[in-house]
Length: 194
Image: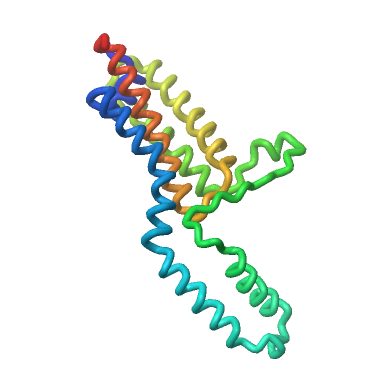
């Protein structure tokens, strides 16, 4: 009889290993090809937006800006335009000083934490609510999936920032689903004797 964990990961399994390897190859090439395609297709519009921003900023008479907050905002806009290199994807390392145990286990960005943990929480609930006969196994799988959810959420929060942030929030569950697919495909191969 198939265990509950095998059933959960079988939801993500590929038909065969060849399909899985092609998928992993595409997943590996995606971060390489997306910035190149973005630069090729969108660099002109990005340059036009930067030119418009510089023209609008130059139209503002800096001497007339009395409020320090507005002056600082004006400088930030000009510095931001000057810093941009036109790249589509920017990785910004986030260095945190971890002095206490509270700093180690703190959550910085709740959206990213949820992004990293949601798939595992859903798998735990599906396992708990499944029609599997072994109730203790259902409870153990639920607890393990919740713990994995907490761990993956914590790890996701520790990943350096990616610009745009939506790419990180959507990419983490996609990478986790790919991991589940690999595990499910290997469990399927072991069960079938391949």
